[in-house]
Amino acid sequence: VQLQAFGGGLVQAGESLDLSCSSSGDSLDTYAVGWFRQAPGKEREGVAWIDMTGDNTYVEESVKGRFTISRDNAKNTVSLQMNSLKPEDTAVYYCAAGRPIVATISRATAYAYWGQGTQVTVSS
Picture 1 (spheres, rainbow, N blue to C red):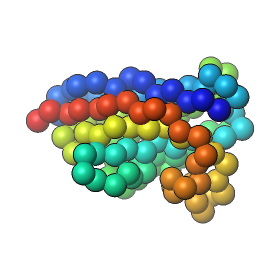
Picture 2: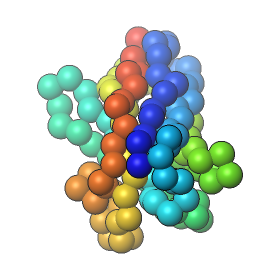
Picture 3: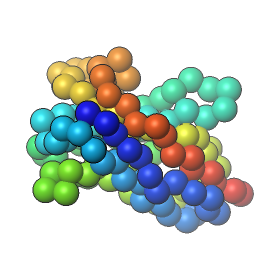
């Protein structure tokens, strides 16, 4: 599975961005997909996750109500809609695919395949 994340950019606080993750290899529909981010000098953290069917989604507390993860298996893509962006959302965002059990869906170690990352910068 070769993942590509795109859609990042520079926005002002309060604006929105939509990130997308696609696979150029195997279909994504047999994988759970997670979005993770890493800011300079900080550890990577999980942001949102979606199971392989899209029936179950999870978001990290700090982005709840602002970020929405969704997937379109027909288009082999997973999206992360980010609204009301804050400067603290600035980071490189990565998508990852794997087959975690529900208890580990938020753990980066549960994902075997990673995209190259896309930069999101939110100015105040």
